[in-house]
Image 1 (cartoon, one colour):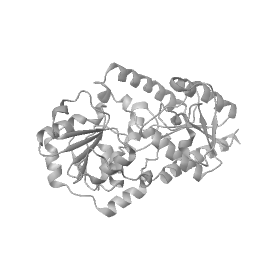
Image 2: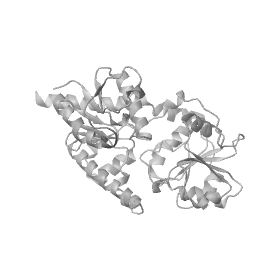
Image 3: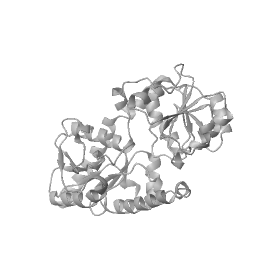
Image 4: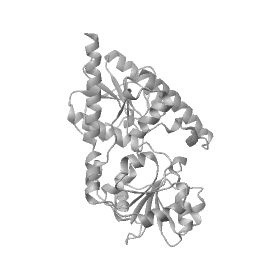
Length: 358
């Protein structure tokens, strides 16, 4: 039996992007600082291990790569783990169907019927595949990690998992301290704009921002995210699309906006408001959904994400976040805290497992 904990390193490949990649990279860095000889990152051939920096143990196994990365995850990775007789941790929602001890489920939106009903066929196929993989993961993994109490409740309700098997470790954004703001040419220098970071995913509810802009023609809305190729608001003069930005440009936009708006209908955690706070934005307008109340109550103004008229009420009644409340919030959501909670739970489970065998 190996003393190592293996970590699924597929997140280091070009195929994996976005928030789950950033989460995984930062958690692995902290785990390696916390327990230098305990975690081994098992990677496919096309993994970019330079993302981890120094001091992280990695090993490259298997022949699958690129578009065949899912086969690496389902065949090569579990084969190596079996030979090593070591526990396996997966950080990006997916665990090998036939081998795995620990998995992080950031959310389970694919199992939320009201969130998936209006999706196109490609998205519905993706949801069905993720549902199958999640069912396999929750059956075999001894512990499931997630990023909020809200997500814990949904995993338990939708997949029938005992809440005692689910640990909440949250997420973090203290990596923002290392990002240097870079001027973004798409936003006004006087900061007189609302900022929103969105995508075309239905749960992000970007139509709300479009409607809000149409109702308030004298206000400017700057939108970060994938270019919109169908949006009716393309003709609105007070909506400015910024497309994909660098981390530095994002930092600049957060720091200079007069307020940040997130109208999401569903999130597992919702990291962008935390990023906005990290870069100095002190006025948040967030949809009144359970997870935002859980994370941001006390530092944000809330509105009904299905009623654009309610935004005016939130604006009239709301205000800036208190500085001490923001500092307290930021001190809670650090990568050291996330890695510490993860390692503590895994250590306790492994100790209990080994004790059962003596």
